[in-house]
Amino acid sequence: MASLPTGKQSLVRTVSTVPFYVSRKQCNVSLSNKKTGNQPMSKQRPETKAIRLQTPKTGEKEHATPIFLTSSFTYESAEDMAEAFADDSLDVNIYSRFSNPTVDEFIQKIAALEEAEDGVATGTGMAAIFSTFMTFLKKDDHIISASAVFGSTHTILTKYLPKWGIEYSYFNMNQPESIEALIKPNTKLLYLETPSNPGLDIIDIEFVTAVCKKHNILFVVDNCFATPAVQQPIKFGADIVLHSATKFIDGQGRVLGGVIVGKKELIKELYLFIRNTGPSLSPFNAWILSKSLETLHIRMDKHADSALKIATALQNHPKISWVKYPFLETHPQYTIAKKQMSNGGGIVTFEVKGGIDGGRKFLNALQMLSMTNNLGDSRSIASHPASTTHSKLSEEERREVGITPGLIRISVGLEHPDDILADIQQALEKS
Image: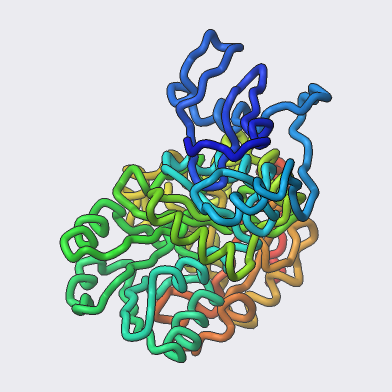
């Protein structure tokens, strides 16, 4: 740890349950815990880390983590202030756009759950994606991306990156062997979602890692649909993992947020970009997200149990052409999903007969499920990607990434699965 300037010793804080130093640049998960007989934090299970990694207690001895809702931090002297600004290696809080203890706690937890060295948080998931692209790509560089990506990511790739002289190429998630032929001398980064949004395509992360390492390409995985409770891409070789924390990580549709984790040297570059350009996460949102992580594993197990039950029940329904869920044996990448995911996640997709009109009729017939473009909520949500989240894609582009006219995406919530299924079935009968 870098030595602190005079008067900053108070920033090195000790908590009676989990002593550690909250750092904006270094994620130290090898922590001791007096309540477990000095058992190293690194030996504890992820579910425990999500709860016990916590900002050190203040003098008030609070049990729940407080919110450090402050825009800036003070100094003991003018010399301390000058040194804090002069030396970027010092782990000193300066300004909440740079770092904040509440935000740091959230980052620490995600890094621990993803088994990453370090991390940085952003105001939204799209800010995490855009910041990653802007940090590691420059004019005349080339990026390879899965064609099955979120609509706004598609817009960045196809509209904004070319404007700044950055080339892109798409590959089909169902044809990973096609990646290598797309690689150019100026290819710097490969990006994908697995499972993909909304088609639930799965790709073998280890296979893609091998290709990227062979050609010295940075490998970035969007782990939003799975969450670190279900899948840890770094274990399979990914360099950087990012999330829209707005989804399952929050879990109740309350706040926006994004987070990026990975190797220290990569996160340092990302941190400097985010610090200087401003897409930082607010302390309040970070507090919500950090508390949400305490129940992430339990929630994801429940989401997945219900999703599998619903997906199984909907197979062979006369109003549905097909059902897709990673842990259904009919999923094209079922074997890969079982290899790298602990469960199938909380999203189910199916094709309603009748095309776009059939999809809209289905949504309009729902009585309990919410109609919104979000996902990962405690409340079940139905959406129609062809007319909403992916409407900016041409019909041909949607077809190429598996977004058919009647595709319905169900984010399975925490209600009783029989009640969720009953609403879907009655809406199908009316569509």
